[in-house]
Length: 228
Image (cartoon, rainbow, N blue to C red):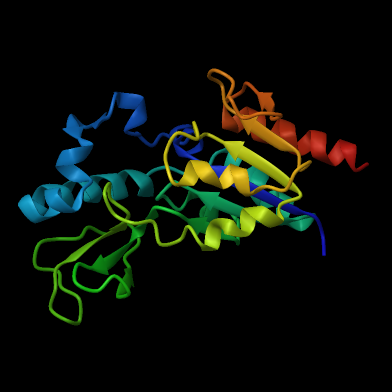
């Protein structure tokens, strides 16, 4: 079995493809607070607004593509076992060619029943409208983990513990419970953080202060040179 690279990715890598993020806009996106559009209470209060918000995000997603950071990670699969654990709800890792992607916070290109979270529908970049129901007669909603909801994929994300290399890209490691995943890595496993901002406080990590589109290809090049 080839060495296992685990990647924790966040909004920073998607932002370089042109996707807006809450953090880049002071907690706002198109002038909406997260509490207006990204909580179960918001959906109960004004489902039309929430659906419109995510329909716009889905439309935007369909208009952009993966950047060199996504592509470099996908190319690594020819040499390593690569697992990507992402906080992002976009499909840019998959469109770049990565085959093992675990979405902690859901997937924007899918809808789910508002009454049964196991009823999922692949909708691509199409909108979800009021009156679009699941087979049980309940309104469809985005397949996204909202603030205040549990993160069902956290247990599966524990495969971080089997990493031979951990790469943290485009995330501040401030969002829980995802931030706790770095502590599952075995002692001595090399950790690299790629972030153009202030270096992380992650003890013992190598920091590449570059955006993902430059930092990831640079790290991949260094890894290949190290292994000759």
